[in-house]
Length: 298
Image 1 (cartoon, one colour):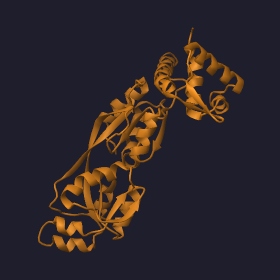
Image 2 (image 1 turned 60 degrees about the vertical axis):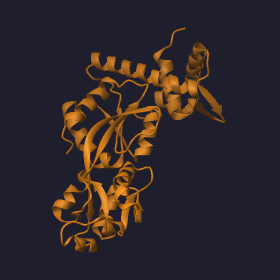
Image 3 (image 1 turned 120 degrees about the vertical axis):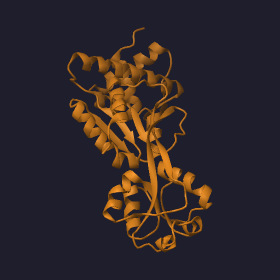
Image 4 (image 1 turned 180 degrees about the vertical axis):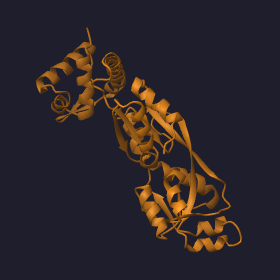
C-alpha cells in the first residue's frame, strides 16, 4: 500500500473541517474525490480514522495519533517545495498567542521576522491560554506562545522569555495614601477591589499564584476578558490590577497609571513556547522560534 500526499492532505482537511464536503472546498477537490481519497487511506491502513457522528466526521483515538504524523509529512513536503522553488506556494505558519503576548509582544516579533523573511506568511490566533493550548493539542496551530502553564497531555512547553508583573492603580487611588510612609502592606492590599481576568487566563492563574500566598484572598471587583479593558478600568479608579510591564509600560510613562510600592516580592513569570508532543516543527516554524528567542519584541 502506498500512502499519497493527496490522501494525507485530505485526511488533515477533513480533521480540520469535520466533513468531506468542507474539506474538498478547502483543498479544491470535489466531495466525491475527497471521500474516495479518505476511503483509500483508511482501507490501506486497515482502520477507521474517524467516527461518523451524524453528518460529521470526528477523529477517533487512532485518527488523532495519525494526524500528527500526517501533518509532519505534509510540512516536510512543503519545506522541500519551498527550498527548490524559491519560496513559492508558501504554507502559512499558524502561530497562536495568549492575549498579553498576542497584543503587546507578538506584533513586533512578526514585523521583524517578516523583514528578515519577506516571503513568509504568518496566520495569528489570539485567545486566552487555555484556548490556545487546546488549539495546539488539536493540531490547529503549529506553535504558540502563552503566559500560563500547560495542562494538556498532548502539548509540551519550554521557557521562552521572562515577564515582570506590576501592581498598578489610578494616580488618585485612595490606596496610595497608605504609601505615605513608604510601601503599601498586605493588609491594605487585601481590602482593595482587584480587577481580574477570566478563569482560564494565564495571567489570572499567575496573579493568583503570586498574590494569594501573601494576601490569602483576592477581593474580586470586576472581571474582564482582556488586558486592555483592565488597564482602562484601573486608570478610571475602579480597582487595582496586576499586569505585565509590557502591557502597562506606556501608561506608566504617561502618568495614566502608577506602579504601587508594596511590601510584596517582585513578581516574575516565565512565558512559554508550546507545541504538539508528536508533531515536529517545520523549517519555517523553527526559523520563527529561533527569531523569537533573540529578537526584541517591541
